Image 1: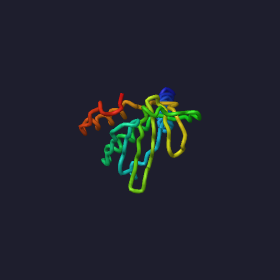
Image 2: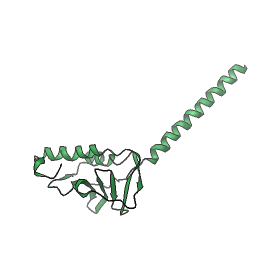
Image 3: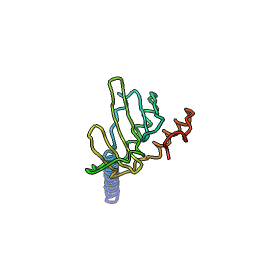
Length: 154
């Protein structure tokens, strides 16, 4: 009988520990929200690079969500004396008929400028996948028949 009670207590303790582990993982995920983008209110996404000849534009909800998802999974911290490298800056605009729903600038050094706050930031936790943003932009450019050599992409 005592062994049966001990087993029940051990099972309860394991259950409680597993539930608290799930909660701390959930809390960690919540901390890494990145940059919130309201994709429900967004009707289009545009991407510009430096002072280049090509701009990406798409109204597909799938593409809007794909680009918006790039801005999750990390946390930012303010950099008071931050600056963007304008030659390598991606400018991403999420818009609808009323105007912009989000505007994000990020350079190849990982420096962010958010138009809403008018402040500079860098990733403090997690990872921003710049290479995915580059791929979306360049794949679209190539699909449109633009010769990459005509533009200012290094």
